[in-house]
Length: 125
Image 1 (cartoon, rainbow, N blue to C red):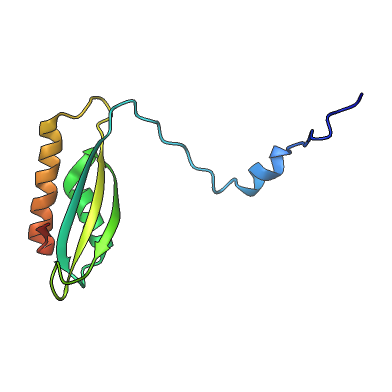
Image 2: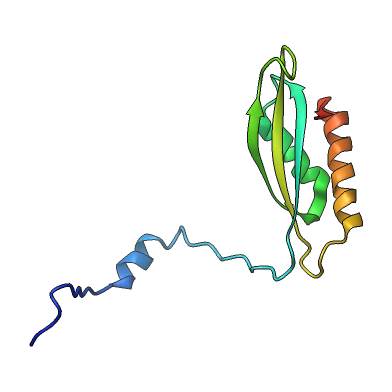
């Protein structure tokens, strides 16, 4: 009868792959079993402020609970005013050893808003 005509066979030789990527292999981070908390912010800032500066500020102000921060929208137009832009940022928060309380999430929110206002002159939209 023979093999099915749609059968495919191949052999992987891992040694050359490992040798080629030896300096590029990084250790994987542990996956948390804790619940993720998300918070979105939209700040109006001067158009000259790089979005990356806002992201760095959010990470710093949010502290150890901030797991990831990403810009998901940038808007410049009549609704925010001339010379300004709105930068929307998604913040993911998680503690390694417990589920975050509403108060902990609120504390991060307050710290982020206060830092954005004082350091970048940002206004929460």
